Amino acid sequence: MSAWYPWIVLLHLSCAIVFAGAVTFEVLVVESLHKHFDGATMQRIEQAVMAAARRFMPAVVILLFVSGGMLFDIRCDGLDCVGSRFGNLLLLKVLLAFGVLAIFVDAMWAMRHGGMDVCRFQLTHRIVLGLTIGIVFLAKTMFYL
Image 1 (tube, rainbow, N blue to C red):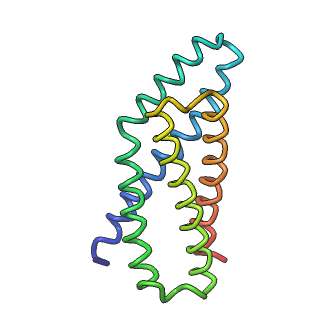
Image 2 (image 1 turned 90 degrees about the vertical axis):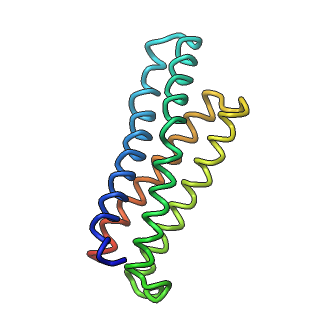
Image 3 (image 1 turned 30 degrees about the vertical axis):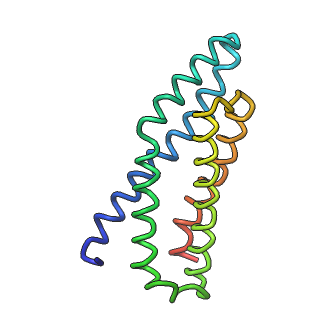
């Protein structure tokens, strides 16, 4: 499988860019529109954004986690690296990623069952953005610290 490593990294990074970009867009752009539009219009905009995300984001998240699991197995050889500085940072990154996954699954469930209001939409995306920033930070620093 290590012969596939560069392709798995490329897939993983591509999915991470799409996911992090979508979350960043929702927090920095969509939330800023509240100042310019009335509540009913914003609700329609947010519903349109959520509908678009619902079409492709589950596949992106699945590919992100599958490729991440494969990379973890290649880099860590099972759990052999846990206990090293690299392994501990990687494990923290994985824990943050599973936190994002739990929030993502909860948000998708809420959207499908009508439980996603404006406040929850904003809070969910802000928390996910913070966790995603932490994941990106760990992804880069675990190779250099």
